[in-house]
Image (cartoon, rainbow, N blue to C red; front, side):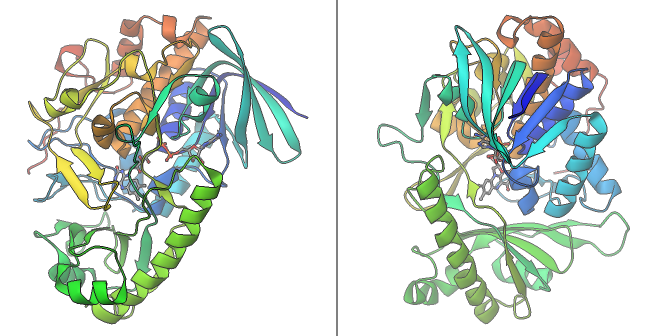
Amino acid sequence: MAHFTCDVAIIGGGVTGVAAGLAAARSGARAILIEPRPFVGGNATTGLCLHNFVTRYGRQVVFGIAQEIVDELIAMGGAVGHIPYQGFTSAVTPVDGNFFRIKVTEMLARAGVQVIYGATVVGLKREGDRIASLTVAAKGGLHTLEAKNVVDASGDGDIAAMAGVPFRKGDGPAGRMQPISMILHFHNVDTRRIAEEIGEVAPAMAVRPEGGEPIPVYFNGSFSKWNDLVIEQGIFPNRDRHVFFNTVWPDQVNVNTSAVLDLDGTDPVQLSRATVELTEQCRRIGDFLRAHVPGFENGYLVPAAIPGVRETRNIHGRYEIQDDDVIEGRKFDDSIGQVCFPIDIHAPESSQAVFIQIGGDGAFDIPYRAMLPVDLDNLVVAGRCVSATHIAHGATRNMAPCLVMGEAAGTAAAISAKRNTSPANLDVRDLQRRLVENGAFLGDSFGGSHAKRAVAV
Ligand SMILES: Cc1cc2nc3c(=O)[nH]c(=O)nc-3n(C[C@H](O)[C@H](O)[C@H](O)COP(=O)(O)OP(=O)(O)OC[C@H]3O[C@@H](n4cnc5c(N)ncnc54)[C@H](O)[C@@H]3O)c2cc1C
């Protein structure tokens, strides 16, 4: 069986792992990224908007690798930039999921990250306060991976949990987690017509990079008009069902509305049940849309390749991001990046979305300590599973925060590997300096040369 060694092992190739891999390799580390699926990019490959770069007051606070990916996507025709919207958020960043996958695959290769696909970490050896090695199940059997430092970008906090780090799942003692959903892609639809029928407010409109007329790229609403039909035919379990649409094309759209409740994405049997139920929901919802919603008549449906898991474990870090940290837009001395998407919770009991806006100037800081597990020194936990309450996780789980955390985690793991120390023993000011030099925005007091871009909202 193979024995891999590296400076930084990144476990998981969702948006967090992609940013962590790029940051680690560009910081001079030998980086290996382990991903079970045959592609990187995670949920971004299902074509969702990268929420959010711009505060509700129109100030861009997310830069760094996240912005670089958007710029690269615009250059290849797979994104349209940050577009004002008058709904629950004041700007949106839609991207094409397949272009995202192609671009980040290429960026990781260019940066020199060794990505091992079809590989899952299934165990590890812990020695005191460090992870000594990881066991990877992949073609050929069980392999060993030794790294100086490890980034847990598994979304589920698998590595932290295997190492015995305490965690919380979902909300309160009942531990109910946000629902699992599967995105429906539709080709050959009339997006203007759909936006007229369903849009709660005017759609976000954008011009594609090659020019032409503005097209609707984001809108949300509900199926209230069809309540009787929806209940009679059992399309959704509830009335006034919420739905979210996004696209960067005039004749394609991604539809986010399916859901299964009370299934645990860390349990293989429950996740498989979710996959079966959601694939069936995609067909049923697709038939309903084609039959009843103007604009979908000639639509061709492709269900997303993966079920999307919103919430599982949040690890217990040296700091837990609190509800009020987000609600009041708090800032921290050990900030590794500012983020700004509102708290976005699809209620565990109904899957209806609830948004809570960020107070203060509309942005809050991610403190470095929230990515450091309580009693382990050479592991950084970033992305969906970062240390945060159920409510705070409603904001941190979105993709711009995940990209910000991934960049910081990969940089921290690489700098500390080079210095033969661990992320827990790294002086956060060294990390902050490096992140700012690389173009990240940590807050006004940390400086930086990036343009403080404004988006007219
Ligand atoms: C239906 C849905 C809609 C959403 N809509 C939006 C939206 O519009 N905008 C937005 O910004 N965010 C949205 N989100 C949230 C956002 O997409 C995710 O929270 C975010 O992508 C999480 O990224 P991640 O990299 O931290 O985790 P994940 O995307 O979960 O990636 C984790 C990766 O780790 C791999 N992995 C897992 N376990 C192991 C292991 N043991 N060994 C090796 N690899 C492993 C997985 O295969 C996966 O590729 C949505 C989420 C869902 C589910």
